[in-house]
Amino acid sequence: MIELYLDTVDAKQVSRLNACLPIKGVTTNPSILANAGIGVTQALSELNEIIENARFHVQVVSQTVEGIVDEAIELDKLPFDMVVKIPATEIGLAAIKIVKNSGIQVLATAIYSSQQGFLAALCGADYLAPYINRMDTMGGDGITVVADLQQLITINQLSCKVLPASFKNTLQVMEVMKLGVGAITLPVEVAIQMISHPAVPPAVEKFDSDWKENFGSMLAFES
Image (tube, rainbow, N blue to C red):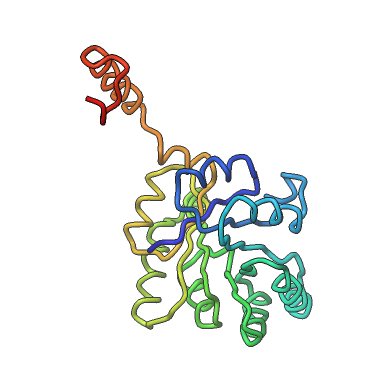
């Protein structure tokens, strides 16, 4: 079954959506944490109280192979189910190979092409995060990149999961899910769009009106 993540550290919104969706965990990045004004330890401690058996994807900020490796080891020591996010750059790929030898879960992030993601998979990454909307706004085709990447993973029988990120609408989400990806991370606003439709409230109100007109305040099992 697909793993569903929220791309936020907003505890209030995570609590809201976790109540109605099968949330696996949360993905973060340095920008999300900086904009929220909260550090990794505090954010994960709060979110861990909300999501049962949560998995957290946290990105390194080091810029060298040695720094990334050392930071990944320390992140993995945190008392949570951790996945270390490493950008799929030349330096990042070198670090992923070393980090995987330590048995640490890794997400290769900032993926903008199928070949970039495939190489990260060959280096041992457990998750691959192509940026759908960012590719689209640059004139690319994020959906096609995911389709090609998923095909490469399947053909080569690799165990990693494609975890698309960067969405602006539900159409993008539905298109990548139809490709058979193993995971996905959604911004709060897109997740809310997926459980909302303007036709639903009027339909529910009509059901309620018809029922009360005939049965008053009785409940269904009492009728």
